[in-house]
Length: 293
Image 1: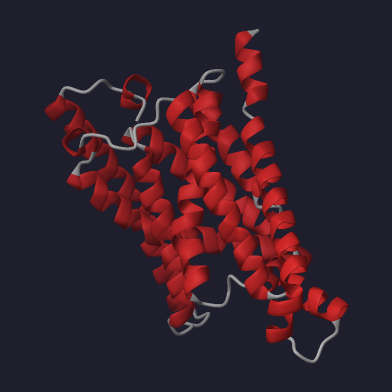
Image 2 (image 1 turned 90 degrees about the vertical axis):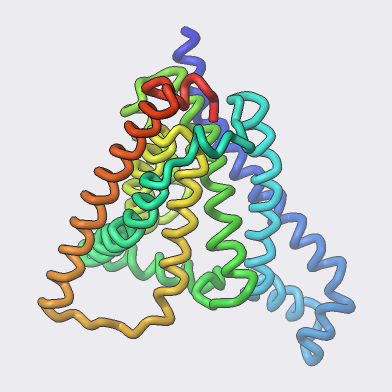
């Protein structure tokens, strides 16, 4: 019965996140109403009150500020939750936690995970064009496609920290109390995909979540999955500055080759470094369950 309780409790973090998003939304809407007389006049001097409010609530900057406030609140709440309930160690011993080979492996995994995610998104969009239209519209209205300081701050730094604490921190730790790691990892990845609230992003987020969960568990520290998530988002943010390579067969073959090599070499190095760290430091086989990192 206790395991059943932990299983259903695994859904609580996702519900809590939705509540935090709602609070952040209403807070910003309240600020918009309160400040529309002064700020609204500066931003939209020729519009009346109702028009100023509508333009404020639908603006990219307004939406981005909601996301930043939500992320900061979530990091604070889930950081304390992870630390207090699941013995999260935010200041682990570098020598016992980090291995150079494992860090290199995380970097090598980035292009493979990015190309694989793009392939999944393109394939899903080809099968369901309506999902792809919804996905593109969502990104256009959110403002994430505009490369500004705020979007980079949110996408590259705040979002990875926030989402890792939610899913690989609290959610997966709770699921591990009810399920073996393989099932717990699938469960947190499924909730991670559901969290994105659209099919295209949700499907490739599910696949990415499995990789992040594996890296976090086997690496013995949430910092490994945070690092991979951060670099994954950084690649996606910077990719807009590079020219489109086109859709030739040669490019497709190169991308497939790079994806396979990146994933195979990355996982081999990661596990090799993990085994070497266990031997050198005389750590237990599953450090995440014994150290609480």
